[in-house]
Image 1 (tube, rainbow, N blue to C red):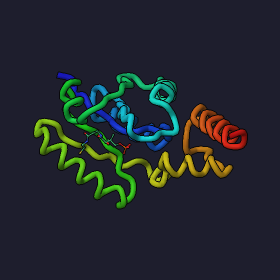
Image 2 (image 1 turned 60 degrees about the vertical axis):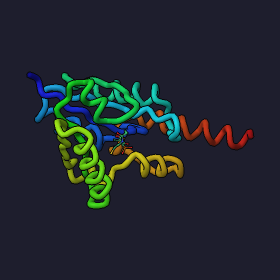
Image 3 (image 1 turned 120 degrees about the horizontal axis):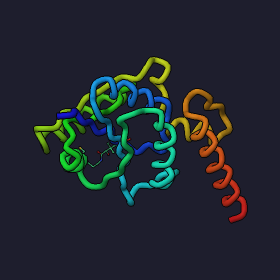
Image 4 (image 1 turned 60 degrees about the horizontal axis):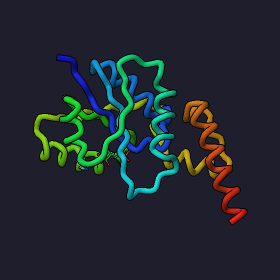
Length: 168
Ligand code: PNS
């Protein structure tokens, strides 16, 4: 049976760190499903459709990758997709506590699904969607941290936000 893994997250937006994890994950699993959490209560910079479009474009070079979205419990979604595992990227130690708690809770909810952690390359260790958004907002350079398309979309989004703040 093919080994299927779910790579869940907010991907607001996808970064080169995420792409690094996808590349590594594909060495371990036959199929990788990148899945965006649909949470109407959380405020995102990009709408779900925009995040999906960016992921689709940035990951089109990989075979055996599917882009999807989910709501509700991650383990229920993983079971419905017949996945064997959940993949998460671990960067610095600061990620550890939250990830550890989430992995153990998910295991308590469904013992059949394992969580696998992979570390990105060293130059991606400090890449995070949150920090990238802050840098763009204040005009900093994010070359090499996100794909060109994402950089373009980020710049456009913040330009529009500024425009609407100034006119409002
Ligand atoms: O990229 P993020 O925001 O760190 O991803 C977090 C995500 C989507 C993996 C997490 O919030 C999640 O799995 N949410 C789904 C709801 C759920 O299953 N919660 C219980 C986890 S212990």
